Image 1 (cartoon, rainbow, N blue to C red):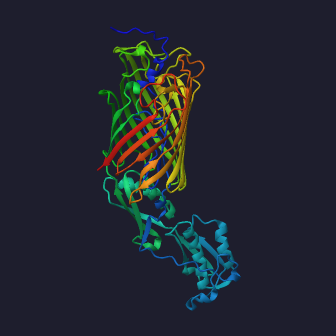
Image 2: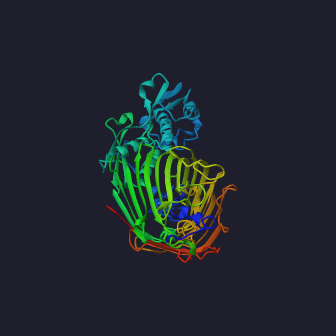
Length: 609
């Protein structure tokens, strides 16, 4: 017999649209890669199962400061040898007596002309050329001045460029100095076949004329940060005709494993649909072409492994040498309420399902090992339904009579990452515009529907305190002038959000989460890698609706917790994380799951080949 219930009076039903998987995919967790082995900083962000990180703020690795480029068989450039003091050139330091006697040929100079340069300012040229004009100097002194021009190039990283005297101009007194700006004749890639063009295209961006070693090293460091490669090095050698400044760049790469997988167990799922889940995630790189990645994830709940789950499939492909990428994917969620809050909801067969399709383009505008600025544009289509006794049924106002909601959303994102030896900054801004296309839900005001605008802002700071301790500060905020459907609302609570409370304990049109966590490495192995980290933390969160949203929120919308945790990595790939955070705000609708007592855990093992 079906159990009757007064749906209008139940304060808990409005939350089911969130716990049934119809939750916002715009609330993503900020993560940072810290320390020298690029360990993900799993701090309390706002993440729901199956979501991807919005950024990876990489701490500038001290090992990356070493020179990645070696010079092979390059013709050495003579050191600068300044003119005597009487020429008034500020670059002259050597005594005239050191000049070789065989170069003591007097050269009367009327004019000095420098040709072929693209980086020298007129003031720099005049500072070296003008003191020589109208004077008679030795050939050695003239060559010292030419060396000064070469030195300017060297100081700016143009290691294959040099200034050369046109000796045919000596007799006329109108001295011609030719600048030979170094260039790259070809780029040889060793260690890979599938990614040969991928590497060459990216290195070629830094191989302009004149060739700059700093830009070339930056391109190599970016390749080192690329998960496709385990190591990248390069050497520069003279080309077939070194007199014209042409060089050959040889890049040696070691590819990372192409297949990566992770198996996990955690309680990062709402207890009402099964708080403990199994996680299976795998990705394969360079499947169809160099640099593409296909990723699949499957997170079933232990309560019903085949009936309640989150499934995701994503494909990403690079589209240009500046790391522009196109990403498309699908997410499928199936949930069933097995542990409702409130006795009046017992024995009700409440289910939820949703499908989400996305297509996006991301393009870095500025990208180097120290900072990155990127823009992204994407389209999301999401369709969801809530069911009661296997029949469509609406929970709250916004869905149609069959419990269905549909959204079509354009997303415009801006990301900025600043990497330093002492820490990293990560910022993300995303504007979301829901519009009435492809069957998007439409309702009369003020009932929420698929037409809305919202903004999501995220910030993270990783601050290195010492070699064994760093601090992670994070804030997430969503603002909107519109009442939102549950799929677009801001959710808080859980092991990846505000720890100390159950997953997705509150949701609203607007919201804020702040988290501060200290990472203190207590034990390391013989290789110097951290194996046990102590993690005290504090986090808080709040949500609120727009004033005209007819769907009410519970009275308690602010939560906070102070807790401790640890991360244990006994062997490579195995990671155990445990957090305990007694709630500072006791909720009236608190359940009896361990999440409600502030206990969150995750155990995962990753491997690759």
